[in-house]
Length: 138
Image 1 (cartoon, rainbow, N blue to C red):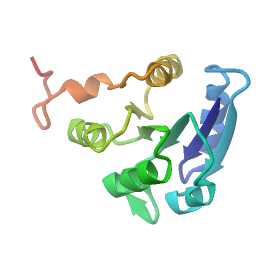
Image 2 (image 1 turned 90 degrees about the vertical axis):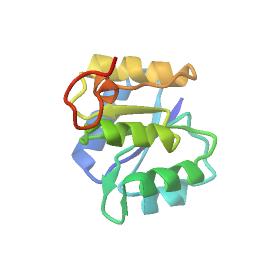
Image 3 (image 1 turned 135 degrees about the horizontal axis):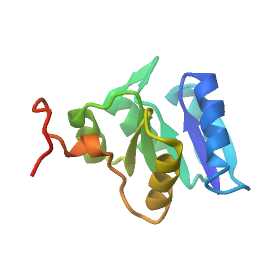
Image 4 (image 1 turned 90 degrees about the horizontal axis):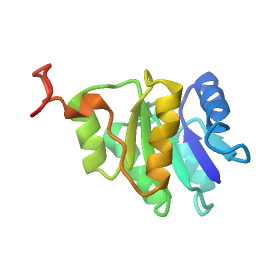
C-alpha cells in the first residue's frame, strides 16, 4: 500500500507515518510539506492521500480541490486541527473520502482509514452536529 502525507509540519508527518505501520506493516509513505511540493509526485499511484487543510500557499477547500485533481485515483482524507462541523461537511462535499481531526485517538484513526480503503467514508462525531448549535443533529 502506498500513502502520501501532505502536511506542513514535519514532526506531525513523521508521527503519522509511524501510525500508518499499524494499518499495514509494509506501507510505503511519501511526504510533502505542501500541495505545491506534492505536485512533483503527480502521476504516481497512491492508495491514500492524507492532507491538512491549512498550509502555507494553499488553504481549505482550494487545497483539497487541487489535491483531488492531482491524485484523481486516490482516496483523499483530510487530517486537520479544524473540528468545525461546517468545515468537515464542506470537505466531504468537495470530495474528501474522510475527515480525521488531529485530536482523534490513534486506534480510531486506523479504523477510519480502513473504512476509507474499503470504499467507505469516515465522518467524525463532530460532523453530525449542526453548525453553531453545539448539539447533535437528529
